[in-house]
Length: 215
Image (tube, rainbow, N blue to C red; front, side, top):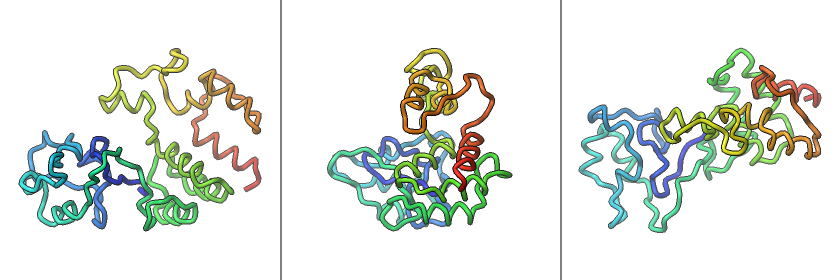
């Protein structure tokens, strides 16, 4: 997957579930320690007083070849949040060209593999601003932090949409069902509206939309 994390305060990075260590063949690292450490955050590995890695803890948790990679990661002295970056470019900035290359190389590993290549070829072929293209990439890979996603990760008390309070906040609800979102679509230059309760997924809708644009 192209998206990874750049270390800030370490509070958003799940040490064993996120991609955050550069220059490793397998970005999803395995623990050498007990199973109950799998929910460790990056912040747990940092001495916040001296702004350095807690090396004795690293030696307990990780296999030897991973430790030098972690020690080489700069710890910011100015407090800032962890940042999502595009791992496939040198500067961490997203580029459509790079995303298109990786998508075709992977033949898409997300759900809906049978239609994945067609979606990626068409989406990345659009002349979209990079930030919008990256946002769509996140949506299609289901890494947008909706209430449903946060609830399943134990980070929210419920799944209800905080805007309308009527349904669980899924991607489909945000884009197709929530009245606030539908008003934005209708007011946009696209002038779109959707049928509430439609069984179509966001990926299916996006594929039809780019087809209609003749790409």
